[in-house]
Image 1 (cartoon, rainbow over the protein chains, first blue to last red):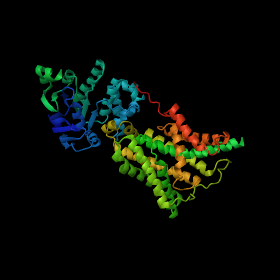
Image 2: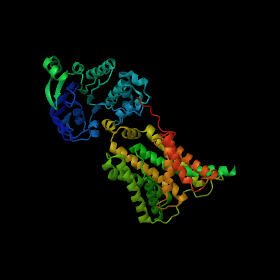
Image 3: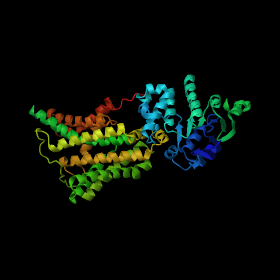
Image 4: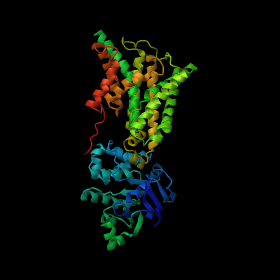
Length: 236
Length: 292
């Protein structure tokens, strides 16, 4: 399996507090990689470091291109779609404009229009609400919109920050169903950060368990799932 | 009745001035979320640039276009050099910078071009508009140009992807970066556009008030009142607000004896206060519902 994203020795800090202390991990093409771990282990920080929202050290390559020195805007243009913590909805814009914003770096009008329809197929509720102000959507709908917005980029890799957070089980099932579809059909690599370990491990091929800024354990998703001690110590 | 019609026309004419400058204020507010107190002095400086070019023999429209283009570049430059380094500073620091910029540009205009009033040409002459006794040709042209700018701005924000990206950058810069919007460029563009609109406003206003470094001082207050009345986030609101302020100012000055000519400026301030107390988002401000 060729590696889409390679991370070596990733370090990041907020002020004096070191959060990431030399992370190594990979994400394969068309594969789902889960980053698990307790609160404060550095999961969200890892995603922020990957897309350049915070200062970081270490080497990050996407499809062979080093991106660790690039700005967020450049990294996004190289095909990194991010579903951020807090969903990042443009609350004052319509649902459809939010999707258009996801494709703001593209110029193929035809393709953008087709992709918007594709997102509406994934999440029909968004089609019903296409001209509504996005701030009026429910949490679950905003999460769908955030996923749709990231997909509008036609990303090589999708970074998902706790997509199940605060959502009703039915909505979680719907959204994870779409992730499964993406994994099978589109060949996009997915890096999934989740608190809900069993949910993540059902979807993931590979998992890394973070422990205060380092990789504590890594392996196939099944192995992590069947490791009782690991489950007790880190995953609750 | 004659007097009333005359005052309404005069009100609309000065309203067009306020609408012009209010439009520039709204533009910068859209881009950075603050009101630029130096907007008036920037416009004055731009107007001096066009005046200087005309002194050097440039035809009116060439000087007009060149001044607007230079102002656009100058606006982007001011943002990059002065405001970009303090982007994350508190609102108060930014306001101090706006006021500082105001003082610097005002003095600079005076230093280069001195403080005497200079007549400024109009493109269409100052005669009356045929068929209207109370409306000058220049006032009519000013209204037309304000309307044109409004339509262009509307189309820009509504139909272009740069316009959409600019709104996204203003609303949620972090999220905008994550979809690939070049946020700093969008802010600089906003400054450039505001400066360009300000230049048009200054060039339109100068024939009426005569060109001198302080020409925008009073007008800015009315422009503020117009922008606040219409809603700082709405270009259409700013233009309507500008015209309303012009009307209110003239009618109150004529019909309320206590106001007269001396207290006209007070009306602008009163409008600002009343709007901020009663309806802070203005007449056409966004009615964004928010989930709680």
